Length: 441
Image (cartoon, rainbow, N blue to C red; front, side):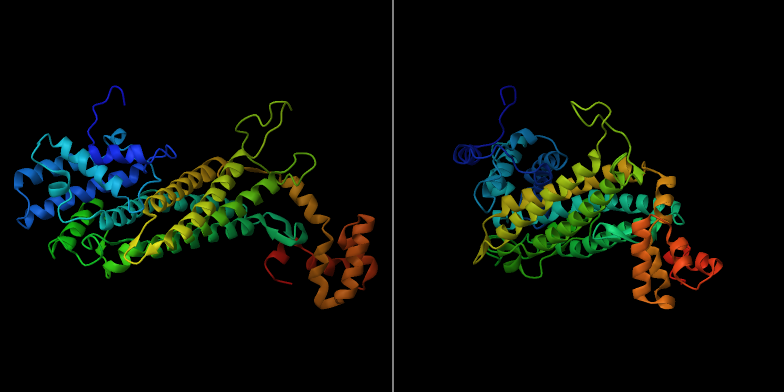
């Protein structure tokens, strides 16, 4: 930072020296959460008569700058650092103390009063994750679900060939197909909301090992109340500080739910890619928006770039979950010692899924067009339609009709008319593709 005044102190410098590992710094959202925790703690300590009012006001003013995203360049400590995140907590304490411009305000004695890295960092992970979920992820997934549902209603009567094992199957409407996607996202929103209740429990007040040593017994509720007021989210104190400090079960649960969202996004993206495949030698059922040239050598080639990008996001989220799962096991006795990498991965997963859900909704789902003639022509020639006759002619005769239709290329109705005693009127009614999607046969 050649043109920036350095605000951090000796403990941060030691961390910079000790951990020149990845160049990846702690997430901005986590740093912001630390600012809110420090300002809330200063206000609580003032109310309890533990911190001079002038010191408290200075710390609150400085901390709010951090909360609002300022001075991020003052947080250079690598993600791969001490497992408790003490280096980052002290980085915040030192920067906030410097910002007060009062040399009597000490990073440990005043900014960190009544706190430990061991309860501050778990609290910051829960706080930043909850804010990201409620402010970004859930709204993005709601937008995706609503966009899919709108397109589903638009194509509620457009019959297409269903596929199982990537092979032709009984007809389905395009609306029904999309309704499945919408339901997956809707279920994900519900699951995320449920698990997010767990991360609204905060470890603050447990201090070093969960006993609350060196803090006032009322401070946890005061800090939590102030954080709730600032964010509009109903945070609560931990129901067991020993669990909150030594484990990351709630975050592991959230990460697992995000992995489920990722698998849904891959499924939707793959369906889009298959339906868009072609344009001449693929399924060519839909046309995704032409966003950019697809090849540096093949003129005119257009690729499904958004579903591809979303699939890569999902792969990253699944990988992040594996890291979080391993890291969450490292709760040796009274402290988890992989907190920084947990923070990095959970916040990255939330951000990636939030952004990709919006992109998928706006640049793929909302904009694709449908090749109705192509879809309709394939449905009419689908021999699997004969399944609708099973209860009347039996499976064996139906199988012979389907094979004959495949071999001759004739419509199944024409072959069934030749091989059964059913009239054309009866067959037309029984083999109506739209009726088969409604289970009326």
